[in-house]
Amino acid sequence: MKNSLIPAAPLTVNWAVTNRCNFKCSHCYSRADVSEELGFDMVSAIVEKLAAAKVFSVNFGGGEPLLRRDLTDIARFAADHGLAVSMNSNGFLIDRDMARRLKEAGFGKVGISIDSPKPEVHDRFRGIQGSHGRAQAALGHLKDAGIETSISSVICKINIDDIEGLVGMARATGVSNINFHNFKCSGLGFTNKDVLDLSPEEWRDFYIKAIALKDTVKGLSISLEDPIIALLGHKNSDSLVKGSVCGKLSLNIKSNGDITPCGFIPIVVGNICRDDLIEVWDNSPVLGMMRNKVPKGKCLSCKSHSECLGGCTARTLALTGDMNNPDPHCWRNES
Image 1 (cartoon, one colour):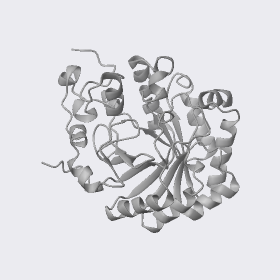
Image 2 (spheres, rainbow, N blue to C red):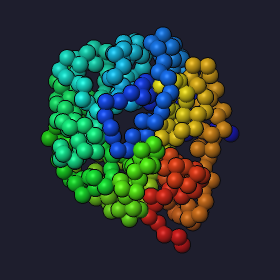
Image 3 (cartoon, rainbow, N blue to C red):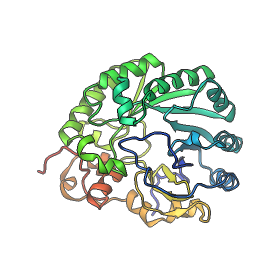
C-alpha cells in the first residue's frame, strides 16, 4: 500500500552535474567518484523527463557545478521547462558577471557553503586559501543580482564552538536562511570522521543551542535537517514527512545519470538515462525500505521514534550497514 504522504513524484531532484571540483574539502562525499559526465544533449533529455514527471525543482550540485561551462544553458533549459532552479556552490567562481548570468539563466536560489565565521578556519577546512572571502563576495554579487541566497554550514569539530558566530555572520551578509547540516560519514567524511564528527552528547548540546537560536533570532531562518531533534521535543516543521526526507520527497542524480536516494547513500536504484523516473520512484525496493523502516535496538522503546524514525538514514547506513538501526548520533541511552 502506497504511503499517502509520499508525493506522486520527487518534489526536488538534487543533481550532481559534475564531480569535478576546485576545492579540497575534508568531508567531501564525491571526490572519489569517477563517474562519467553527461553531455548537454543527454542532460537536456533528462530535464525533459523531470518536467514530464512533474518534478517541482532541480538543485544543481557536484562537485562544483560552475565547473560545467554549460551550466547556465542547462539551467535556462530547465527553467524554460517549468522547473524551479537552484544550486549549491562554494562561491569561488561567482563574480558580478556570473551572478548576472545566473539570474538570466533562471536561478531563483543559490546556496553558498561557509563553515566558519573565521576565514582561516573555513579556508583550512575547504582546502583553498581565500575561499572564505570569495564566498562572502559571492553572496553580495548574488544579492545584487536579485537571487535569493542562503548559507550552508556543515556542523563538525571545526565550528561547534562558534555557532553564534555563524549566525551573526549570516545576519551580517543579509542571507534569508542558514542551513546547519549534520555531519555525514560518506566519502572523505567517513575517512575523517574520527577527527571531524561530534559525539552523541556533543550533538545533543549543539541542537539545544541551535533550537534556542532558531526560536529567538529574528530576520534569519535557521534550518535544522536532522530528524533526531525530535528527542528534544522539536518537530521539523519545514518537512512534509517524518524522519529523513531522502527517498520520500527527493532523489539524487549522479553525474552519469545513476539515481540514488540521496548524495550520501551510494545505492543505485536506477539510471535516469534509461529508466522511467516514476517507475523507480514507485517501485524501487530500496526506496520502499527507506519509507518503511523497521525500528531496532533502542528505537523500539523510544517515544520519539514516531517523529524521527530512527534518524538520518544515510549516516546510519554508512556507520552500521543497516538503515533500520538507531542513528549513531542519537544520544538517548538504552532503557
